[in-house]
Image (tube, rainbow over all chains, first blue to last red; front, side, top):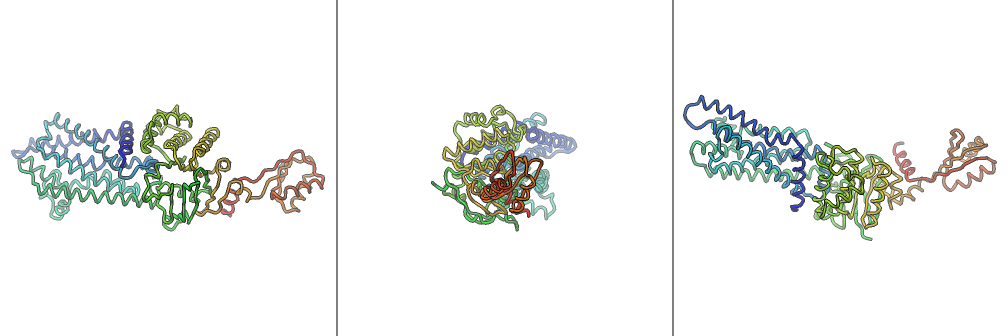
Length: 262
Length: 304
């Protein structure tokens, strides 16, 4: 693995981001937008609800943690779809650049974008609603890391599908987070789901993380056994999506998809 | 001389369609080999297989004596590619695009080299222009700069001078020959037959995915055999036409000109015959067969 080549991919993304207004929207506008909407809604609920946990903070905590997943599930896919739209794959992969180096490069860029996005969002949450991420204690760190890794796994899965099946499946870049959200129990407990959906939800690493977020905010202790399950599922899904991506890349070379003018 | 590129029984099938059908060839160090053929013949698929962007269905590719399975990075480190039909990142400037590519090849002192190459290929003035704002010809020249970044030992050029002005195309050919003089090996596809005749040592003619001829450009041109004799007539156009037809040559009259297609070895017979008939002409010119004639002959045969 060459760090110079990984650096080249990071540099390319940096140049690209500077001149792409819509990607800046992704980093700043959409996180701020969801924070405003959910913040106002939670503020209204807080005024009408009586006693119990702070609904405003509960919802803001959920929105902020969800944003880690939402951004992570899109950023890697968007980097790749840019290369396809710009017919850049031939230029990149006719050099010694390996698939692993390319993935590390776009993941580093995605992580930097995510950090910028989250710092901005946390600043807004603090200024507008007085919400501090530390109200989750240290739990926010494993929760954010777990949700980010899960987002990256799904992003890899979507990318793999795009290079395998072409642009027809690119709608999943934007749809995947929406499809996963109801089963992840972001805004309600697992028990709120029907029995069949609970079974599905338990297969997602995100469900355990949001369940524990609510427990923590209600003053309870984090269930370590659930964190272990969540991270085990995360590692499994990440490895499977990586494997699927490599297989799809090889398949794309067999089918000639890398050189197609998408 | 060492064999730089060796292709054995290379085949590529896309479903039921066979794009490249069991081709074998080798290219030695310092050679410039032209890969010719009509559109859809399998040239670009072959080039993409040589770049490891398409996986062959069957066959073997060895470059610098190594194969992609175990030595992909080493091979691509010393290989480069240029085509009129590929793109670079549109939102990056020429300098940024070339800098990124230079880093992918781990080139030292890249900024100095980029300045040198862009000056050489006449795009220095566009160094800080966004790629998407360049004309097609300028993009081609930038991509040629990219192809020379790592001082490649093997250079694959797919239609390198399409969309270029004649003077720039001539300069590109000069650079290609200069790279060969420095020991590089070049595989070139082109529709410009004059260009192929000028720079290529050997030609592989590919059609329907198969190599149908391989020789020097001169020898391939000779296979056409027919030369064209143009006569600007003073007197005796009718007699000339009758003589040509009687001898089995195809002939045509256009104004004061008569053009006769004749095998090269029959030119002397034709001229002697016209002298006997006391045909009077002011000018005579003879077009010898070219590689283009061979190309036309082969593709026409295919159409008919």
